[in-house]
Image 1: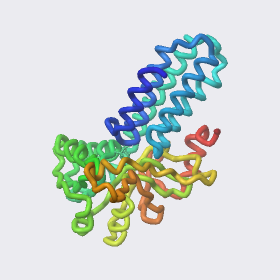
Image 2: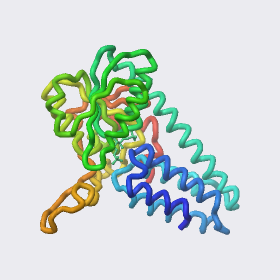
Image 3: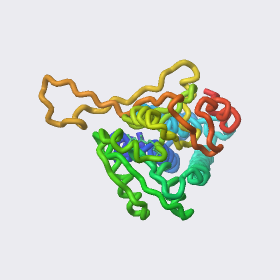
Image 4: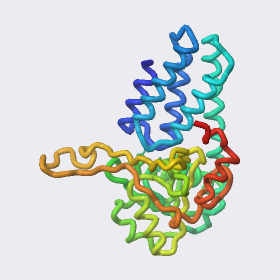
Length: 307
Ligand code: RUB
């Protein structure tokens, strides 16, 4: 296995690279590096290397369909290219990876432009965990001259909310930081909730950081619109075929490193927010009903359905 794959997968596993987009970008870049440094002599050997990388990345974090879709797309580009020479195949993977990253960036920009229009002057926005897509949207709203405040959660047990808080403060956005369990206390002060996504199922349910579904229910109770902002490629095509999105179970030691030996500690990384609690899915195609995800995917990314 190439060093770039091993090192990157380890960083992803340890949350040194976190958030669905960053995970996907890191995997794409590592495969690009592997393709550049390949020792394969034939197309068959080259494809074996790519498949090994795929297995390793899929296992690194199991609730990451954006990464899986990205890796699968790269492999298909190499597989279907009528090219046998390894150096030309390598160039194909390198340029396909560049194209994927450029398109992903363009999607985020467009999504941020669309979502920023929903931030009202003088409003209070609530967010949970760290989503680079949410931060981008808020940065765009700020750049557009909107004046708003943000309440963000700490996000136990790995404290990703601190990344959000630092980024927002650096952007000059007035930000209040709370522990996750204070969400209901503050929901009455909030005009809208925006969270990111790790996975979107065929029914339009959204998998995101643990606690998101509870926050969605609190928002529902307080009649506060709950938006999810996400690239469409976080859709998991396996869910259309009956699979449930797997929820990554992380090490109990992240919750309590010196827990009493007989105590059971559970640490699910994500939960599922049912579509009925989601006001809108903000994506590169606009603000859509989460239930329309399959239809929109078939139009925009038909290749996702080809296994
Ligand atoms: C991060 C998380 C984020 C999504 C979206 O969880 O749940 O909301 O991944 O992020 P973790 P982005 O820290 O466990 O990876 O918008 O950056 O893709």
